[in-house]
Each structure stands twice: as structure tokens, then as C-alpha cells.
Image (cartoon, rainbow, N blue to C red; front, top):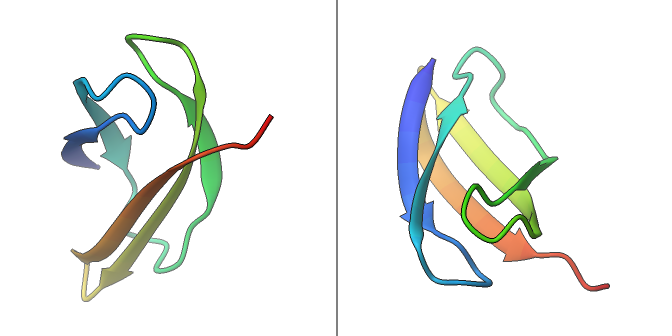
Length: 60
């Protein structure tokens, strides 16, 4: 597992998530550990290294 730190798109607090580098393209929803809002997470891996990462707010 790979720990990645980023800013929540709602509350702007720095949070971290554990990412699985064995899957190259991923999309999933994870709640912010500070404000509990849902975040759409888009990590992409190449050669087991994080290539790109997006954390997007979900329109409600």
C-alpha cells in the first residue's frame, strides 16, 4: 500500500489515503476524515509508482 497526502477539496485540510499500486487506473469514493464529505479519488500508477492523482468534490 502507498500512503498519499493531499488537500480535501471541501475543507482544504491535509488528509491521507492508502492507495493500492497494483491497479493502474482507479476511481472510487472516499469520505474526508476531517469534514466527512465524499471525495471522488482518481489515482493512476505506472510501474508501481503514483503517476497522477485527482481528488474531486462530488456534486450533490
